[in-house]
Image 1 (cartoon, rainbow, N blue to C red):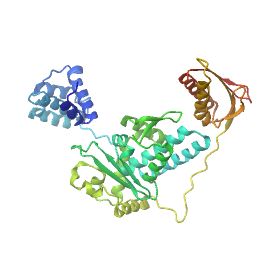
Image 2 (image 1 turned 180 degrees about the horizontal axis):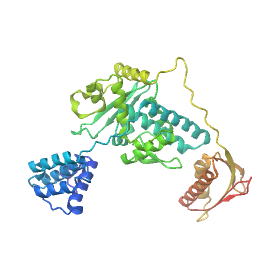
Image 3 (image 1 turned 120 degrees about the horizontal axis):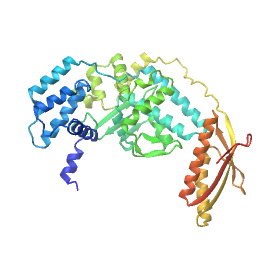
Image 4 (image 1 turned 90 degrees about the horizontal axis):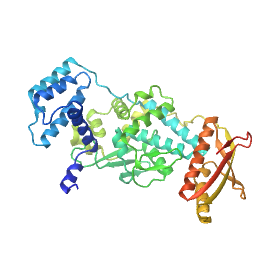
Length: 427
């Protein structure tokens, strides 16, 4: 059992750091067959043998893990030897490598993506597709907040609703109890003003209103039926999510972007908008200017004016004209009849009624179900049908959901979907 001392020692270090250090030690000890405690010569050989296959930053990370291991176990630290420093210097000279950086997500890309997500949300609402509406609204809030606050993926994944304060029309503050740059675990407040365009505050408000979330993680996984997960997104899931909605919005080379692209994009925009470097570093949270961090944590008129100045330069607002999104294309609808027959395992009519009620409130409600024959349990659905494959997907997913509800309520279910115009059946 973990002691109280061990508990606090464990809490003092970020989970990602513990995992990455443990992985580095496994690589040295198990994959390379190195012995611990290590000698200066063995570590020098380890570096030399991996100089071509691993980046210099990765090698430095491995050294940091080995240094930690020796310190924690009471052994002299061989990684601090002059020979090790010289080996690293030689690797840097013989294997120069340009640092890979995330492609910055520039403001015009953010504008195009935001417009597409707004349009896609409206289309999903028209079709009655609650899952897609939730997903697009969440993605827009994540992209806008991630950009204007220069958040990393781990910070976006760590945001909790109870630590967010919104003042409509003014701005919002987000408190993170711990983050990568917060070495003393003091917690940090991040503020962001409400903007006239591409507003992160409005986007987060829209997400909270649609999702009806009151506490817990701000950004969560959404399944294909529109059900929200109880837990937050994993930091590693944000990159594929970002690339997916950028590609859907028509952004070229979407695979070249990462979650760090939001941070780099904001930094480039701020630099070109006249921000002083010290002010930018303070706002983003880079560690070199810790003493000045608190001066920009508050939402004030001066900070808002600087945001608006940069917006005016990059995206001039048409005079007295509200931008109009392109018309949402109509999606063909197919009328489907679904027959539902329920019988409980023990003959309980109450369980049958409860199962039917759950079916009507979830899957059937998504397709505007109308009862056409109460005696035979017949309902009429309106299914969005851009293609035959999507119609099949909708109906098989619906049948899966109906059977899941029936099983949970301890009922047998006979359900058949039928297209009255073609006679095609799904069961």
